[in-house]
Image (tube, rainbow, N blue to C red; front, side, top):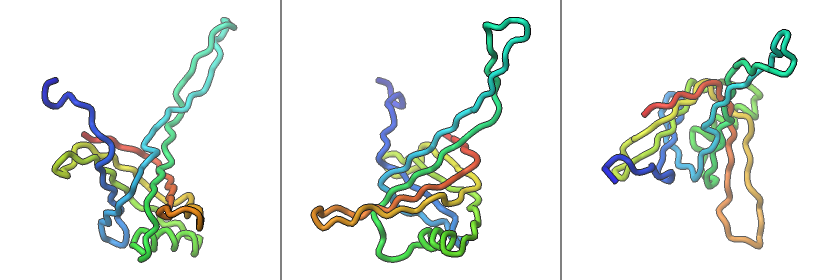
Length: 149
């Protein structure tokens, strides 16, 4: 195949959060929820009862789900999430940037999620019978997804 026609791999990526004025890059093991859907409304054809039109109504996004090993020290992102849940005050982040990287760690593609705020914060199972990394799961709501190549 010619150069540039190979599919991209999904394991080399970076996530940027603008927290406390800093652009924090936090290592995650997985990112899901980079999706958008157009919701529709069905309208019956006037005079023809066997036909229905599906009309676009609005766009729906995400949620963005991020997983990583639980950090022993609080990162700026963890402090932000904890503050949202402890104080019950949601201060949306302007954007979150997810970059797909090439072999030299240069961005190839990126997605920007706008008006981001936390929906849930979960810590995985504590289990004395298994020696696994404790996983933290962040679920974030966003209202716009922009894909750039």
